Length: 438
Image 1 (cartoon, helix red, strand yellow):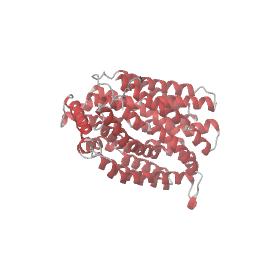
Image 2 (cartoon, one colour; image 1 turned 90 degrees about the vertical axis):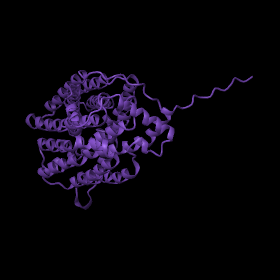
Image 3 (cartoon, one colour; image 1 turned 120 degrees about the horizontal axis):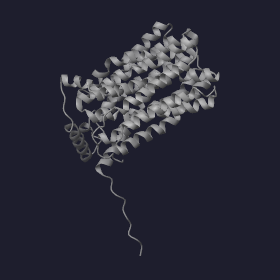
Image 4 (cartoon, helix red, strand yellow; image 1 turned 180 degrees about the horizontal axis):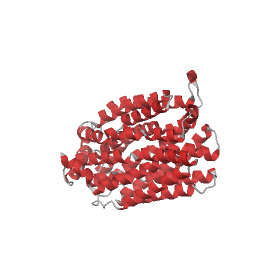
C-alpha cells in the first residue's frame, strides 16, 4: 500500500502578503535607486577624463564631487515628512524628473564654478529620494522584515556600479558632435531618471489600504500589523517631533551614518582614480576593473540584511562591517602597488561598507514611530550625508598637499573606526517579532 501523500504546508497570509509586496515594489524601487546612485557617482568615472581635459586639480575634483551632498541636505527632513503625510508616489516622481534633467546638463560644464553649481543643484534635485523611500518602506514592511527590505533596496548601490562601470566605459569611447566621451556619459545616464519619474506616478501605491493588487485578506492583515506597531510607540506631534532629533540615540545614529558616508563616498568616488594611479591602466580598463569590488559586495549585503532580520540584532551588524571596512582600507595601503592585492582589499572594503546599510536603517523606526520616525530618518540622512562631502573633499585636499592618496585613505580609515564605535553605543531596541519568510 502506498504511503499517504503529505501535502506541503499552506502559505500563511503573512508569507503571501510579503511575497506579493516584494514582487510588486522591490524590483521597481531597486531600479529607481540604481538610476539615483549611478547619477550620483558616475562623476568618478567621468573624472578619469574630465580632470585632464578641464585641468581640474584633485582638490577641485574632490570639492565638486562632494558638494553634491551640501545641496542634498536641504530638503531631506521636509521630504521625509511629505512622504509620511502627503504622497510618496508624487514626491519621488518629482525628484526623479528634476534630477534627471540636472544630471544630463552636467555634461555641458566647462569651468570649476560650473562643475560646483551642477553638482550642488544635482544634490538639491535628488534631496529626499533615499530617506523618502526608507520612510515609504515603513508603510509596507513590519519592523521584523525591514532589514531584508532595506538591504534588497540598497543592494542597488553596488549593483549600480556593476552595471554602470561597463556602460560608462563604453560611453567614454564615443565622441559624437565633437563632445568628449565623459560628457556623453553624464548626458545619457541622466535620461533614464526622467522616464522612470513619469512611470512612478502610475506604478507606485502610497499605502497598503490603497493597494488593489493585494487580496483583501492580506491588505487587512498588513494594515492591522502596521497599525499595532505604530500604537506601541509613543506618538509625537508638533515641537516634540523636532525635540526627538536631539535624542542621544538619534545623535549616535547620525554620527554613525556620517562616518559611514564619509568612508563610502570617499572610497567610491575616488576608487577609479586610485586604481588608475596604481595600475597605469587606460580609462576604459580602469572603469571595468573598479566594478569588481561591487560585484562581490552585492550578495554579501543581502546576506547581512537577512541575518540581521533573522536574529533581530542590528548594532553589531552595522559596527562590525564598519570596522572591517577600516581594516580592509588599511590593508590596501600595504599592497605595494599590486593591483591584484589592492582590488582584493578594496573588494573586502566594499563588502563591509555596503553590508552595514541593511541593518542600519531599521534602527530609527525601532525607537520612534510615525512622523517622528520620518523626521529622524530625514535628519540622520540629511546630516549624515554631509560625510559624502567630507570624504571626497578631504581625499582630494590631502592628495593635493601630499602628492599621494595615502593620507586621504587614512582619513577614511579613521572615519570608519569612529563610526563603528558610535554604533556600539546605540541603545538596544525592544525585541521585534520574528521575520516573515516569504
